Image (cartoon, rainbow, N blue to C red; front, side, top):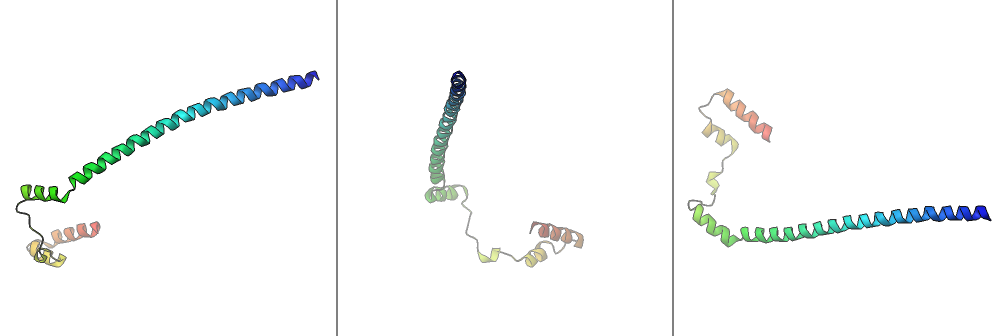
Length: 112
């Protein structure tokens, strides 16, 4: 009977230690969860503010006003302004040496 009491007491002590350790771990995890939730709320609020700023900055009326103010000479592109590669090379590099043309061609090939 006495051995059973000692074993039961030891089991209760071990269980008490385990329960208290689990309790403190849960408290620690709750604090971390609260920090993370607060960070999520802060980032969400920041995203809302950035979205509002983006909407304001990309307003077509505002952009049109800025374009007319700072880019008065800006005109839409006409199809005559677009050149094929061969036409560009003939026009721009017709008087260049072959070495420079080949270097330019290699650069374009590496970019594509």
